[in-house]
Image 1 (spheres, rainbow, N blue to C red):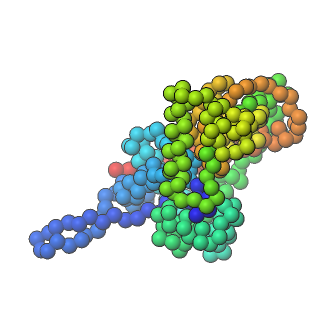
Image 2: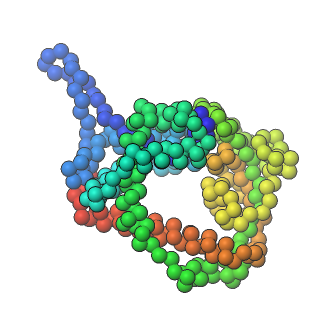
Length: 329
C-alpha cells in the first residue's frame, strides 16, 4: 500500500447487532441504543463507539498525524458524537438547498486522492478496506456525503469570508517584529521514514522504534546528535540531525507546528509528518529581516482567512443547532 498514512478518509459507521433470547429458540434481533436524535434522524451508540474506536486506532493515527490522544475515553466519545450531529445537520441543510453531488464529482474526488498520494486503483482499494470500508462502492457513498457537506460550508461560510488590507496590515505588525522581522528557528531532527509502499503493521513498528529512541534520549543514554547519526533516515544524519534555519510557512505543517511550539533546546515527542516520524529539537532561535514582504503578507492573509473560516464555521454550526431539533440522550 503506497503512503497509507497520507490519505484523509473518514471511517464508515455500521449498525450493531445483539443476540436476545426469548421464550422460543434463541434468535438474533438487531437492536441498538440511541445517542442522539437530529430532527427525525437517530445517531446510534454503536456509531459513536465505532467512531471513538477509530480515533484511537493505529489506522487513525497513521492517517491523522500520528499523535496519540491524551483525552479520556468519555471526552473522545463526546467529541465523536458532536461531529456526527454536525454532519447530520449539514446533510439536512444540503437537502434544503437542493444541492447534489454527481457520480463524476465523486470520481474526480477519488482521482485527486490517487494523484496526491501517487496511488493506482489497487492502492486506493487497499487503503479504503484498511479504513473499514467493504470496498470502493462503500467509500463512494461516504465521499458523496462529505462532498455535499463541503458544498454547504462553501456556500454558507467560505463565501462570506473577506480579509481586508487593513486587517493584513494589523496582523503583519502583530506577527512580525516591528513589521520587518520574522522568527527563524534552527532545527535538528531524527527521521524514521515511512516507505512509499508499506503496511499498517510496518507503520506501527516504525512508530514503536521512534518511541524507543525517544526513550533513550530521556534516559540520557546518548546525545541527540549521536542518536540522529545512528537512526535518522535522511542526509542530515551525518550532521547529527541538523537541517538548518527555517521561518514559518516553509516546512511541512505537522512538523512546523511541532517545531515552532518548542523552546530553544527542547525536544519534541514523536511527531508524524507526510514523510514519517520525527523527533525534533530546536537548537537556536533568532529574528531575521523579511526578504519578501509580499510573500509575508500573503502568508498572513492566508492564516487570517483560515482563522476567520474556523470562527465562521463554528458560528454556523451553532446557528444550525439553534434552528433544528437536537436531542442528546
